[in-house]
Every structure is written in structure tokens, then in C-alpha cells.
Length: 495
Image (tube, rainbow, N blue to C red; front, side):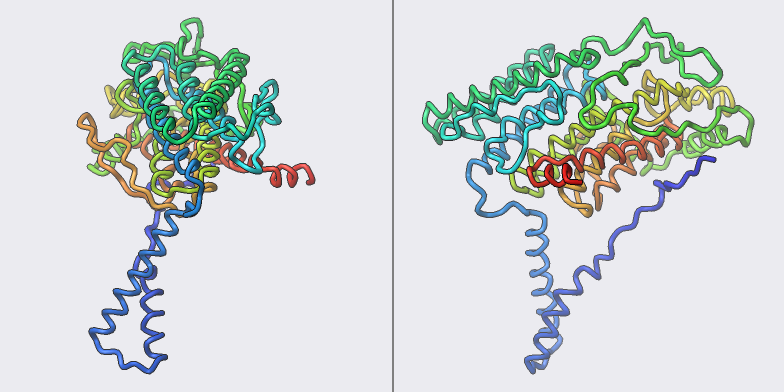
């Protein structure tokens, strides 16, 4: 019997802020008493103010773990990585064919290239060669004396983005060249020409090596050129997903399960099947659909906000559901400013988790072929009922949004902290839908609300979201635990 044990609509609790502020103020006043002072009312207020100031400084320090004496080249490198990842999202948003799984895969290869190009500056970290059969890193022949990290990163991002987005509109291809030139001019003032040229050449070599490894993944490589498979014939059965008159697009990437993963393969995880299809009122499946229908009658203002804020289903207008978590990583890293090695590891593992989650979830989608709530509700509950937004052209179970969110949240929590407060501004200033920024106390809270939004928007059942969260969390944990440092690797081998 399937258990619905993730109450993601009402289980989040905000921290007691009063308790947080009590400690420093109490410490301040206690010290004053121990010193024999007679604390008047005004002085008590001083204690509270001083205590609050102390806490504020501690909070700033906690949110900015970047060490003050980090080398200038690594601080510059963090800026380079952030700027290129912002452009990466613009490219994904405006380039035809970049749907969620395709984007997730591209992110993984882009961040892999950046990680490999940065290895000479990351003492103790290992190449991905041991995890990626067939990939050959060019770093072995590197002359460290001429290597300059920001220049190598600038070159590797420029080259790999041209490779993965050859069909981007000219405006955005020009943006790649403009950003590369902008940083090259800045870096010319920091290092000699020979070091600059050497570092650029190294970055380009790494990009080409990663690109050549991508080419060997037949199902995934250049998938942006053929998203929808017109030759695929979905099963014709009661409750099975099918294109229809309202949603005629052919199936999106029905063979994505064959794509090469980084840490997790499609067959590695135990899948939980959906509740048995049944159109009998009161049955488990009917109840799943009735919940979707009920919350829409009508959607509250806040539920519309949640539903639209997390939709990310509008090609050309928004990032994809996978891209949303790169946007969140961008904001979190900009806020936290961790050491450079953490920055590049965070992007790499987040992207790999997104990629592997897409493979696992798309495998499950086409294994079970569950129809969308709109079709079921229209036949069994209310004729003509429609979801708040358009239905995607692939089966419902499990939810891709939910899996992307859980996988990325698991990595981001491991890298940046489980209690990381963040105001997500991905869709700030959008006029086409409710994109008002929303504040969260953790990445897990974001992932759960992201999952809940799919029921609110009317394109998923609760069971879809629960299974997506479960699969994504497993994938994210496996990727987060991938040993990238020599000591970690040695510990894994010793067990």
C-alpha cells in the first residue's frame, strides 16, 4: 500500500527568531551584572542593542564563509564563474531545443569542463577521469608556472558554450564572445601575455576534451536538435498518457533513459509504481485526481503565486525547471561567497545531480505512462476542466520538477548548509505571471514547495511529486557524496 507521508503543503516551520536574538543580549547583560553594575532600563536596552549587533556580525560571518586571505586569482575566478553561469541561463532560455533533460545534461558537461580547467589551482582535488570512462583530461602536461586560473576558466566557458549552443540566436552567441573579450582585456592587466595565452590554450583544450567525451554519448549528444520523437508510439491503454487534440505534441525524449549518467544510471534505483489506475469514485487514483481538482476550486492568491513562481515551463520566457536550480545556485553562491574550490564543486555536483535525476525520472515516466490529471478529471470529475498552465508533452508520473528540486537541494545543502536562508529572485520583475521574490529557510523547503506547486498548477498528482522527491533525494545524496578530493577518494577505496 502506497503511503503519502510527505505533507508538503503545511509542514514547514519558521524558526523562532526571538530565541536567536536572546543569546548575545543575555550574555551582554549577564557580564554587566557579574561586574557589579547596576543596570538601569536604558542600559538594558544598550545590552539588547549590543547583543543584536554582535549577532548581526556573527550572521554576516556565517553567511560569508569565504576566507579573507583567499588568493586574489581565486576571488577573481569566483566572479568569472558567476558571470558565465548567468549567461548560461540566458542561453538556455533563448535557445531552441533546450527542454529540461537536455538542459540538465548540458549543465553537467559545462560545469565538468570548468571543474577540470580549475584543477591545477585546487590542491587535493582529483580529475573526473576515474568516474568518467573514456574521458581524458589534458591537465597532466600542464606547466603550473604559466597557469592563471581566471584566464583558463574564461576560455573554457567560452569554448564549451559555443559547442553546446551552436544554434543560439546570434545575439546570444555574440554575448559569449563579448563576455570572453571583456574578461580577457581585464586579465591582460593582471598577468603577462605568455601566461595569458598558455592559460587560454589550456582552457580551450579542456573544453574540447569534455566535448569529445560528450560526443560518445549517442542518445544525449545534440539532443536539442530532436526533442520530440514523431516515431514513438505511446501505449494505447486506459489511463495511459497520449497526445490529444488539446496537446498534440509528440512525446518529449521518450528514450532519455539511454543517456549516459555521471553517478547514477536509470537502472540503479528501485522505482515505486503509481497507485493502480481506477476510475471508480473513492478509489486511490480517483482520490489523487480529486485533490488536484479540489485545490483549484478556486486557487488562493498565494497558491497561484506558488504555482506560477515555480512553473518554469515557458520556453523563451523562463529558464527550465533544471535551469531554475542553477539560478538558485547562482544566488546562493553570490550571497555566501564560499572559497573558490567550494564554488566550482557546488556547480559541478548540482549540475550532475540534475542530469542524473533527469535520466532516472524520464525512465520512470515512460515505464508507467500515467496520463495527466487534466485528462482524468475531464472524463471523471468535471468536463472541460483545465490546468492553470499548459500540460507538458510527456507522462505524468513521476514529477520531473520534484526530482530536479530534491536532487539539487540535497547537493546545495551538503555544500552550503542545511539551514541556508535565501530569497529567490529568479523571476523578479516578470509581468507575465506572479514572479514576486519569495524567502525560504532552507534548500529543502524550496524543493518541497517546488513539488507542491505542480499539484497546485494542475499538471501532477500528489503521488507524482512524492516519487519525484524520493528519487531526486537519492540521486542528490549519491552525487553529493562523490569523493573529489584525494583524502575522500582514499577513504572510499579503503572501505
